[in-house]
Image (cartoon, rainbow, N blue to C red; front, side, top):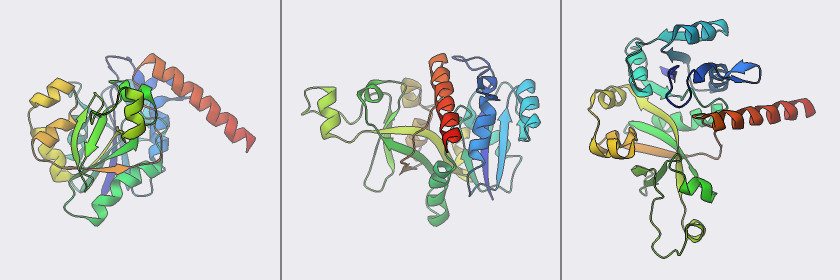
Length: 255
């Protein structure tokens, strides 16, 4: 069984109450849920929330909801908690609650490799970086990968370092850089193994939990997507999401 789980944390350190932040006429968590429902491969979609008010709002728009203990700190641990309830799930998609406009096709792109190759434990999405702003931003996670599309390393710094380039703009012209889009799909065993492990040194240094997988020999298959995604972590991101939603509504009216 393939399930999708959307972790939503009310007590976000950078944007308190983020799941209920309004984007147009709907809270962000509803946008994310309705976007994820467009996946053709997910058989059951669940919201994993840490707050009773978020749970009430989510049930109000028809979502399946599991309330998780507030002491669970990370989205991955919240996913693992829910997966232990749904023991029939063998493939589990972790869909970030702060991705209100995620394409259903993106989720399916990440799921598909596990359907055809039993050796794949974890997949995630990547997209080529096009702008200097993304290349330089520590909030845009970069990734390098091998010839079989398995991740070698993730970093908040631009990787690889282009030694022959005299500037970042020159590097962007001669080297392909890729950003990580934080959607993961796990086999059940890999998810439970990952979340049972202690934080690693590189994970603590970069503040990137996927490095815990690499440091413990859990291979991550990367899948390139053509779709863009808007992640909402700050007030500035929220303004951008609201502007984008207005554009979407205008486009729909013009059809």
